[in-house]
Length: 421
Image (cartoon, rainbow, N blue to C red):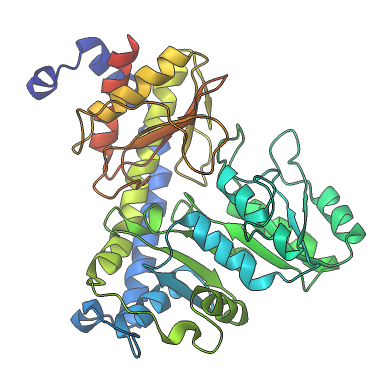
């Protein structure tokens, strides 16, 4: 196409992507079916809560009787199958949302067990396994921590989890990270979560199961709460914000536990009754409405990325035709120069800051230098076209997001050209 020539994209890159794309309609079809069903679910939740223009109005001060805040949380609870939810612009990130859930339910001398191995690096600071003492971590609060590695095929080791629970003095909560983080493994799907919860509940009916749901929302027909989890937590600048939410995060699940989360977000005695937002709630409602479609576009883009890099001979995870439970696509480049070139190409495809050049930097909360390509409308929004990677062998880049399929396709072609393919 003439416009692609004007943007400097080579015929070779266009041909490579077109060849891969021609083989994908049957892989795209199930994604489109999930997108459609999730869109209906969202609309039904809006209608059930009778959302109207009044819910977009800003509030100030204490925020008593804030209809927008309360109804936004109620809509999200319906969508996720939860008793209730906290969806707030005052939750700064997915890590913050997860921390709220953990601090809400854990007390001194309780034990937290991660059942998906070592969590994403920023969670290490919350647990206290990453940096020193007296930081306000769970370790400082005398919360014990254990972790159980995944089985070699990437599944939860239920037998080891049950053994670990049995030897702990006060096992209180299990933590499950649905997405892969910076690990070369599959994401945890709803069927596996349902089986895991059922196995744990048979012997430990009172233990609290908390799921890091980041990157997973709307990828399947159900969410983890519907499969038996007690709490889920995530970021509104990822999947559920639909690229429109300007900030925020959520925790959803059991009503009694959400009350504790509200106490942690504000303070005991006030809980969810306060918290104003002087900007309009419209972008949160509209982003949530758009989220199933945007996630579907991101999934189709990730499938295309996987297919193209498979054809080029690179290892990818998941494979292009694998079942997906998150939007992240891992690509093992095994070369630092290719990694830097890939991120440069993704940045060049951005509508915002397209002339910026990504460089590795010491990002707060991470051990290695991180390189990120993110020309996003919302700072750091990984539901938009973006990529990031720790700069270390085997130089795996994590492609995620794209508000629409065409933008992901453009980013892929520009990355191929930068990499010399």
